[in-house]
Length: 113
Image (cartoon, rainbow, N blue to C red; front, side, top):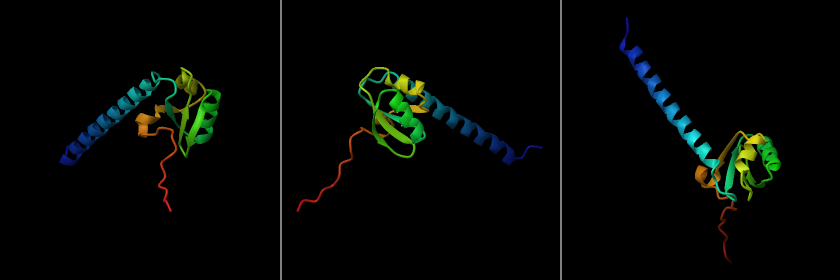
């Protein structure tokens, strides 16, 4: 015998599956678009800092900023994203599109005396 609670559970499963599909599709598109990025753009390397720093060094990039799981790097050479993945980067995204990171130091409020 099927009760109303069992039918509703199937609907939530379908909704969760649809959300997961949309998120995975979006991530695939964003990841694919990074390969077409122009040289000199800031890239966000997602993953443990030690792995990200090693991948950036092997890919001949410059480290601009680093924290727990996001490292911002830049290279003026074409093919930087491909070299990052080849060097072991887990995920590379365009830093400016991923979170507004420009690789520039943050503006600080300075009080004038």
